Each structure stands twice: as C-alpha cells, then as structure tokens.
Image (cartoon, rainbow, N blue to C red; front, side, top):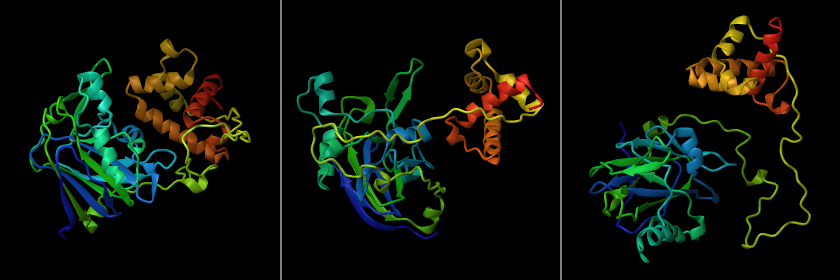
Length: 341
C-alpha cells in the first residue's frame, strides 16, 4: 500500500484554533495528544465562503453521531458533500449541541471571562477575513452525547486516548477550522483543556477509492442559479419596493392520477393502516402504520413502484404537487372502491 505524504503538521494549544486551506484530495487528521479533548469544527468552501458545512443537513442524512463512512454536507441550496469521514478510531462525534460561547459562561456560571468555542473559532477564521457572525454550528469531534427518553440532549465523559484520531478527506477545496473546545467546567472534555495535533496528508488512490459516489443534481443550486446572487454588504434590512413574488413550483395543482394496484399490493396497504389514529387520511395511516408495524420496507417498495408507474404514464410527480407517497395513498383509496382499476 502506498504511504501517504505528509503535507503539514501543527499542534493546537488549549484556547486556540487553526484555519487550514485543505485542498480537494487532502486529508486532515485531528488527533488526541493526551486524550479526552473535544474539538469543534467549521468548514467553508475555500472559493465561496457562503457555502459552509451544515450540521442540520448532516444530522438529517447521517444521524446524531456521524462517523466513519459519512459525509459533511453543505447547507441548502448547495447541499454538496464537502468532506468525507475516512477513518474515526473512536466513533463518538456530535451534531446536536451548539458551540459554547462567552454568553453561556457568563449566564450559567457567572464568568465574565472564559475560553469558549465561538470566540476561538472567530479568531481563527479572522485570518481569512471572516467575522464572528460567520462562525456556524460546530461539528463536535470526540464529543459523547445522546438524547434521553424525554427528548433532552445530554453529554457524558469521553473515553478517547492519546493517538485517537478522525481523518477528514476534502471533496472540494475548503477552509477547515478546528479548535480546542474551551469547555473545562463540564463533561465535554472531562473537565480539562488539552492540546490537539493536526496533520494534513495527501490522499492516496486507495483513500480516494473508499469514497462513495454522490449524485450531482439540478437542485444543488449555486449563485449562478440565484435570482439575487449578490452578497448583501450593509447590515440593515430594507424592503425592495420593486419586489414581485416568484415562488418556485407554483401555483401548485393537485390532480388525481389513477394507479393500478394488484390485490396483493392493496392487501399490503390495508395490513399496515392505522385508521384508529388517522381515520380516512390514507397517506398518514399507510405511512405511520408501516413504521409502527415494521412494514416500512414494503411500503417504500410500493411507493417507488407507484412513482415509476406515474413516470411511465407521462406524469412527473412534482408537476402535480404531491409526492409518490400521496399518490400511493390515493391509488390505494381508489382501488379499495374499484379493485379492477
């Protein structure tokens, strides 16, 4: 196996961060020096800082604890894979908790001055002309969190050891900005602040071959697709007197489209309905019933089949203002009245 070439190395001391130009095909390793230290992480498209890593999209796609084999996605409307988690020796990362801030320590602990992730990030990013307003929600590396039965997020002590690391492979040129989390009065980093080591490698062919393909779609829009591509340079918000609404995909038209279902398909739908909760709302009854009774796999299979039949009939689902799931439910309702259709 070809060895990786080391591009650079750097040690972040407590209270600091580092902005790194990580080019497409390079790997950033964030490594424990002593163990037990959380790292906050921001990332921006190096050529357009308005495209940045989005915890919300990443959380939706990969869950609360993304690890090896998952992507870091940019915010809508870009929604592109920016980085890929190539290796993670711990498997405990977080996209639930926000970065800590000066306000948190003053409001909760009474500290007028305290290290905090927002201020550290802002200072590291200032090297590239970004402001404190440009700091975005952090991808929290090595942070152990969960959600309790009442829906409240919590954190626990971490178990990382010296030498544990996360490797992030850049899928585009990015400004990668890790920082040593400034929280020393909570479990985030086991009540202490420790250094972290950063190493940039050139990815090998074997590294690049591990990355799954992601689609390039028309819905992944960039400024050339925007009605207003200009970045606002002043801070007050003022109404544009010449504004005329041009909402996409409107007006929405709802049309019935008969879809033929076999008796077996109709039986599958009826088997998972929750009419006791949703009554005659077939869309909700079918889908919720499938989830609650373990029939989601078959329900999704039928949904895909309905979508295929709609396209075969020359009717794209989007043109009718409803999803394949809605069409599926309407088809089931019609077929229940007339199984021959």
